[in-house]
Structures are given as C-alpha cells and as structure tokens.
Length: 545
Image 1 (cartoon, rainbow, N blue to C red):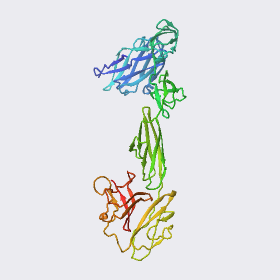
Image 2 (image 1 turned 180 degrees about the horizontal axis):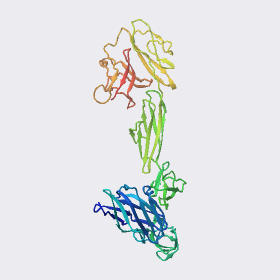
Image 3 (image 1 turned 45 degrees about the vertical axis):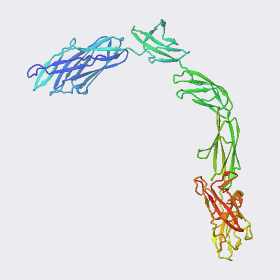
C-alpha cells in the first residue's frame, strides 16, 4: 500500500530567525477498517525551543473523532476544542521553550470509521477554523511563522468474508460453504447462485460478491479441490502352509480398517482368503483395496536326534522327517553350513547346542531346530605312576558315581571301588569304567610302570594325524613286523571297540582312525597290543587338523 506523508512546515521568521528552520507536524497515512476504531498518530520533527503554537486538524464526514490523547509534556498550557469535523489546538509553553526528538508522538487521534473498500478520506491540518502559527526561540528572540498545510489520505480495508481458506473435499462428496461478513445483507456466488450458502462437489474457483447494508461491495473467491484418492497397492499372492504373508500399505495414511479387524498399516496373513482394507488419508478421504491370498503346499521338515542327550565323546544321529522337500541344509549353532541334501547326519557336539535344518522347495522354506544336550561329566583313572618290582599300589579313580575296573592279567580286587590295590609283576595299563551323571560312562586308564620292560624293542605310539599329508596318517609300531603273533584292539574312551586285528602290520592293512569305513572323531582312544603274551596298553590321540 502506498503511504502518504503530510508535512506541516513551520518556517521561522522575524528578528534573529535562521532561514530554513522548520517545525513539522506529520500525520501518517493510515489504513482503516470500516466500522472499527482506528488511531492516527501526530508526530513532530525539528521541534526545538518551541514556546507556542496553534492550528486546526480537519476531517470529512466518513470519520468521527472519538478521543484525542496528547503527550503529557503539553498538559500545561494546552487548550483543545473539538467539533464534528475538526479540532482546534493551542499551546503556550515555558519561557525557555520545549524541545522533542524527531518522531516523537505529539498526539493520538482515535476515529470511528465508515466506508467501502477503495474509499478514502482526508485528515489534515487546516487554516479554515483558526490561524496557524508557531513560536520558536532563537538566540533569545521569538520568531512566529505560519506553516504550509498538506492533506493526509486514509483508505479502507474491506471486512473479512468467511470462510477465506481454500477447501478440499473427497471425490464423490460435496461441501456446503456459508459466507458471512459484518453488515452484509446480499451474497452472490459465481455461476448464478445467490445466498450466503453454496454446495460444491467439483474442483474450481468460486467467486463471491457481498453487499453491505450501506451498499458497499466486497469481493472474494473460494478455491475448492477434489481429492481423487485411490489405493492400488495390494497384489494377489500365494501362501504356503505354516508360512505367513505380510500385506503392507504406506504408513503415511491416517487410518486403516482391515476386514480382519486390524488397524495397522501392515498385517500378516496366516491363511488363505480375501483380505480387504479401507484407508483414510490426511485429507480425511477414504479408499479401498484388496488382495486374494491362495494357500499352497509348503515344504515341511521335522528333525529329531537319537539320542537327544549325549555323554562326552558320544555322537548322535540327526534325522529329518520330510514332506515336499527338494533341498536340505543343516546348520550348526553358529549358523555355518555343515551338510547339504542329507536326511540324516551324525554329529559329535562338544557342548549343549542347537542345530538348524532348512527344508526348501519352490513354495518356500521351513526352518526347524533340534537341541542336543551334552552331559557335563569328566572322570579319571588317575595319574600314570611307577613302582618297584614286587611292590603294590593303590589305584585312584575319580569323577564318577560308580566304578568297574576291567579284568586284565593282574587282579584288581575289588573291581568296583575307585581305589583297589594291585601288584603287577610287569608294567601294565589298568582300565576303569567310570559311570557319572545321567548314567554316562567313560573309560580311562592309568599306566603302572614296573622296572622290567619285555617289549623294549617296540615303542608305544600315542598320536596319529590321519589328514592325508603322508605323516603319521596310520598307526604304525616300529619293529612290530618281527612279531607276527600279535593282536591289536582299539577302544574309544567309552568302551566301544572300534578296531581289532590279529597279526597287525603283517599285511598292507594299517589302521587310519576309522570305524566301519568312516572317520572317527578327533579325541582320546585306548589300545591294547599283545605280543607273544606281553602287552602294550596305551592311550592314543587322533588329531586331523
């Protein structure tokens, strides 16, 4: 909006006057609202050493002065006379004059207004009612000067027509809009619709003209947009037995109402059927969508372990009972692949752990787990020792709830206690069967060395590494080939005979740590080598890595 500045110039003249000095009273251009009270400030500029003034402010009939408030600095000596269309103001100040900073508000004039949009009225200083003059002290002399007078322009702003904000409706719906403005008596919408209300069901801009009771014309327009919200997200799909399908919608919508009764953006379908949803967007508009979920076969695999509880060193057979399975993947507790396409595998876990199996076909995958519990149990036949020839020794097995010493050349009596007394004539191995928690049984041995050594030419072997590198891959006793009358038996620590051979090393057959053609797990084993009635009893470690 343009602003108009009224300059009231008070040119100082007379004895001692300084040419060009001016005192200015300024009324700012003001925007008025019809029917509302409005204040117009009167500012002063170059107001220095002023001792007196008198002037009139006039206005036309569109303004009605309600109140005039003046700077308290002028209370003493101020005379004001108010009339219907003007106000006369005079002031006699102190002898030394009064000074105010530029822009100081001398007075506020408060008017009631009436008019139409685009109307204007003048408020300004006028000499029609009293002569104008301003007295200013300069160098001790009083100078009186009449000012030039300029009018001030005021304009009107129309009262608001309601509603002003644009409107949005959902496709298929309509909205009824009712306009209102203070003092308006007639309304006309574009398109020939009269009255304050209009029903709208299409996108467009709808102009409105309102006429007030004093024949003022106000115009505005309303923009209406139709939200053609559609939802085409869901797709028909298949569902395999024991599987689920997530039906997901954008999470930016306001409300979701599924045929299942759920109200989230996404739901999970566990069975076949028709799934329908009605959603509401941010504009309050609704849309529907649906998906057909068809149930189809899914591969199924149920694993079980035989046995599910193991003693240390034992193995178990994991078997998968399958239906509609094309591919099988076995995973260990760390998620590493250990076998593919085998319905049964043998494992020897070293701790309680869970194995997973994934059964797969074209429909999907089924994952199942089987837990193997390993009983924590450790037993010992005692530390190897040495005794003098003819001496006796108390054995000392530990870790079990019961014990059974295996019968051998030298009596162990009683054989069912952990610490029987023995008196071997030669160095001997004593083997004990130790029963512990959950009935787990392990075999351990203790070597009792006697001074004599009938098999000094045959060195016992305690380690083989059957990993195919050509070194220690087989159990081989130096010089055993000289003694064809021999027999070798190898046991696991739990008493299972895993290898037996008469005349060992008399042909090409050498033991490579296998049982029934399959590699045995790494670990500790026990063997007995009998040569010409003499025995070598020894623990044997198998390490492949």
